[in-house]
Amino acid sequence: MLRKIIALGFLSLAIAGFQAPAAAALFHPKVHTLANGMQVVVIEDHRAPVVAHMVWYKLGAADEPPGKSGIAHFLEHLMFKGTPKVPSGQFSKIIARNGGRDNAFTSYDYTGYFQNVAKDKLDLVMGMEADRMTNLVLTAKDVDTERAVILEERRSRTDNNPSAQWAEAMSAAQYLAHPYGIPVIGWKHEIEKLSRADALSFYRRYYAPNNAILIVAGDVEARAVFALAEKHFGPLARAATPPRQRAQEPPQRAARRLILKDGRVSQAGWRRSYLAPTRSAGASEHAVPLSLFADMLGGGTTSRFYRELVVKRKLATNAGAYYSSTGLDLGTFTLYATPSPGVGLEAVEAALDETLAVVLKDGLPAADLERSRTGLLAAAVYARDNLFTSPRIFGDALTSGLSVEQVEAWPDEVRAVTMDEVMAAGRAVLKITHSVTGLLLPEAKVGK
Image (cartoon, rainbow, N blue to C red; front, side, top):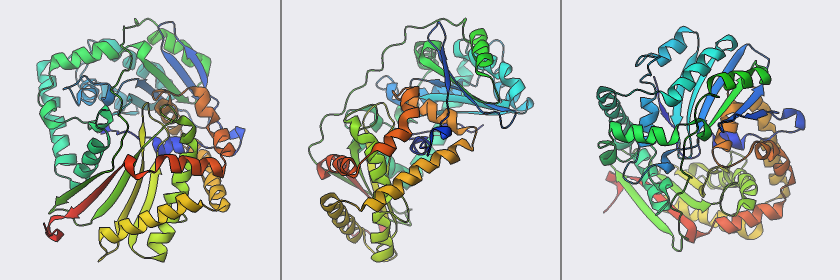
């Protein structure tokens, strides 16, 4: 079964897409909190007799002990090994035999487990998920096998991929103190030393109902779901889960620059990231305006970067910007470009810098703001078309420090943003001293 690692920003596009044109497009979740502290969120959607069942834990790679990088993702793998009730390796097979599918994912701020099943199987999957929240059984063989799987995953996805190495290096350069600079999968030398005791210690510390959120979306009645949650999760005991205390990033006072050269690179690339606030950290008043600014600056073929570098100057085959407003701590605002054949990265960077300087000085047309606002607000309609999008939106937000009310209020915040606020946010964040610029180059084309 595929185990996805979801880095900071997983589902950020979904969150950015949670913008609705009218109140009718909101998800209208119903919320209940169990006596043991577990939050339960239900999004009713009666269009088809199916259910998305998700358990999100408020911990991720950024909550790992020093020297134990990768333990959150490692434990995610091990959670499928079994309990006294469900033998090792049988969890996903039981789900499949009942016509469903399941998977899991790890990010910096959360770990999640989900099952998509027919609505009459909700009782089954909820019971299985509650069972492994407290009754996980691990053998030495289980741990050795899964450690080897993760090491191979790292080799294939990162160590043998120059683009992935480039992204990893940029994160490490951006975050000098904060654990967002450590890869979600972990460093190879630390993964190799992760033990059964490490996994169980992490499990017992963080896997508890008071550190989890249950989200159910689909053809269900909220009261019935709350009753099932009381039945399966209600009896589980709270744990003394420690607060989420992370080393914070010091002020960045100088621009950073890195170059990765590799003979396997066939296409050069340019990227620049800036430390940026989120809706939960830093100057949060800039978060929603930054979402609009990113779209106007580089959100597609109508954006300023694309029109200037790709269409007008023909220096790049692609150019843009992206930003996620969710995240428990400071995030990043990123610019990127891919040069056209025969064009050097120096020319692309100069054109991007020139274009950005003009935008920050003179602003953007009011029509661009309205175009981006309309597109972002309309995206919620499409989000509602997919039953499995809504629990992902709420899970990402709630584990990243936001409330249900803040998620529901996002469309109104987007509607209220002014151009002055957009430009103030852009000018506050896109300062070269707050940036990391990365170049990916073919080894053969580098003179030194």
